[in-house]
Length: 336
Image (cartoon, rainbow, N blue to C red; front, side, top):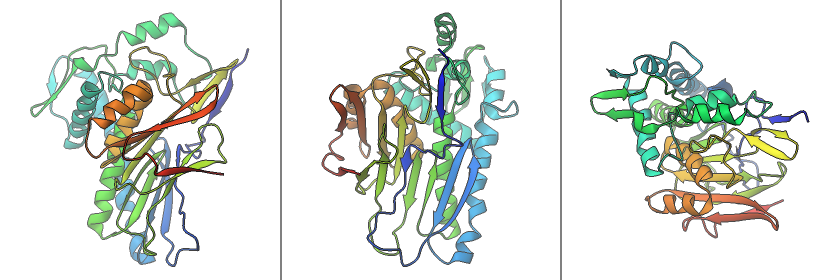
């Protein structure tokens, strides 16, 4: 049977929908700019003098352009490609690439490979967002043999990729890093309050001028017209991973873009995982790890770390089931 393909057009159907949940129009609406960057739609909203804030937008988008030039797996001239070509030798990457690799390896060890920056052979094989059919088991097994975060050593001296056949994919971490750097650039440039959304990653800072708390809605994993309203829990970075943004169907089987680095196939334990953290990079990495691990192991992982929270959904015979870490429990509600 021919595959039925569902995927976001430049991630317009983002996993995490920003909602300005206030009872009346804002006294000072934000200035806004949208651009395509890192393969997704990036939205920057700033509060303040319109002219002054508008002049700051290039500071934000420059960070996304830099992350793309350094870390894109689609560019032969990226530093990631250079590290792969230098396999077997130590190299000294830029501070940005070093930071992303360092944090990626930190979390890969913490979650025992549920997140793995060396998953590139698998992501290339599955080829999302353009995938229309599942690869055969032999091809998956061959690509899986090339995934091993232990082959990547990152320390204060540089980076060493021990295997010549390993391929890197820093997509999730690089996007979160770009969001964090954009917030830092905007804050340094004079933006005291604002929000950045990049394909499911969100980070906000400062206070809204109307005095209302920041509130967000997590899209219902199976009904795009419904959402879950979540209070501000004091962590300004949020990321969601789900099986409903990039996927195709073969019969009734859903194949999505979040590949389990330990099986080589799309992770099946959850349909959505949202993580709150202090940085967008950590939130993005951990939302992927939690999605792969499933509710029990994923929430246990998050509970081990301070200043991190998570909310997950599973699709059961009785309907949608939610589970959350202690800091989120009782602080979200379903909204039609």
